[in-house]
Length: 132
Ligand code: NI
Image 1 (cartoon, rainbow, N blue to C red):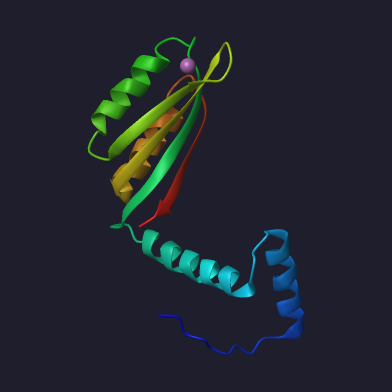
Image 2: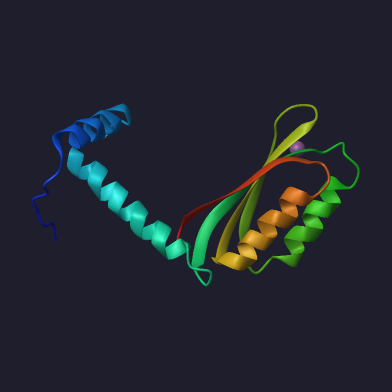
């Protein structure tokens, strides 16, 4: 069910907001406000330590580096409860890009992301939590 509601807001602030959403190609102000509200709710939910979340971990590593492949495999086996799948792409002669899809306990997922980031041979890694 859609609900219409009125909002009172400073003109200057609204002009800036409209400029931001135009830059992001939003078709309507309503769609932009809906997205921002939804994101605020997600942010609030995933800020809880006990949250059950879904997300992904991006990893770039040089597969020539000694033991990095074994190390990443070992880590992922230790966290199989929160790993749904992973995909590997060969970027160039040296580098591999891997994306690991995760779902479950937020603290466990952050621990996994930290272990991956700290592994020798990993050049870049980031965790993105998509939602709860
Ligand atoms: Ni590769």
